[in-house]
Image 1 (cartoon, helix red, strand yellow):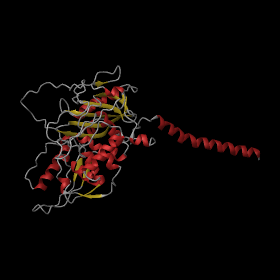
Image 2 (cartoon, one colour):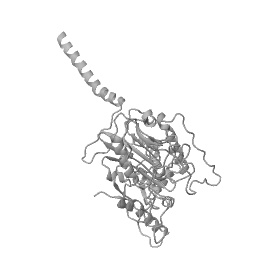
Image 3 (cartoon, helix red, strand yellow):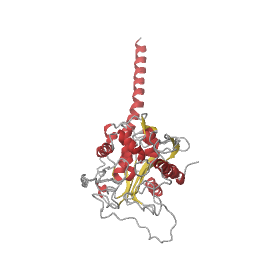
Image 4 (cartoon, one colour):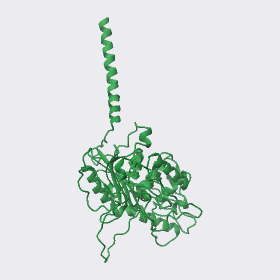
Length: 436
């Protein structure tokens, strides 16, 4: 039986919080205000005003995200306040990507209702076509979706079989934690599972430590973004917790996700529903503490469980960023990516908004486009390397992605060239026999 929302949150957040409470010697778990977990939807006697989607026609976030609601982005003493990132001109991705309101192909049908995301985009994972968007280059905070950039760096740098020993610093990080404990033994593959499936900030800390620490990891993440022409993006923390200068856009998040899908293990992990995670030994500093057994962790992306053809994705939430989301799905051989920034849990939850936008994108004409994702990173350097194949469908069959023109040519060459050589050899052999 598939794990539904309550079970996912219990495995990924409540269980980790309980473990953290035991480690701290506290009788009960204390909620951390800045996490991936969305606000509670408990009952209320007050009447809320009707929901309206934020208007972005005037480009309010052209240069930087909205003002923060807390002090999380105040620079540390002695540190400068980051200046706004330059705004590229012309816009990356085409002229229409400079528009700030809703951007649709000519003659496109009306958008689905109940989309609360201030900014969003739907694009083709394989061809890079941008199908529809709202404020595509508007600058917003990524929250934990920036872990996609950390995953790109880590999966291309670290040995996945290396065993890492958990530290108290890992266990003490703010936000959502998978439940790393001091003295626990974790392979980098298991840390990547915790990072991608369960959005563990403790896993992000353990990974960043191996990359040289938080500052070094952030610098590497920003180098990746720049190399991909994701020029609205600036990471401030490895985990996505808000920090000075943190920024991304719906366009950039699509670019980062597409690059990550060049890595087969990333494609595997975003599609994985549940795995077992190691425990850790008793803490000698806590009287009568005992060994902590391993436990299951589950993917916190509800689209994976509830949308036919879902490939997987990444969730995010902080007080400043609000709800953020990036995910992909496959239908009839086409794979689309949807990104949401500064969304809310009303009138419907972010994964439900993503599902409606995916349905909308799949229903558009195959030739519709309003822009293009840049040919950068792996695809520019190694054009023969395809994006990771979509995971098997429920019936066990494999979906085939759209082939790029150069990929089709390669297939023809690989098949046709040997056949041509065989025909020539047979002709030479027959001619030789006749001369005898």
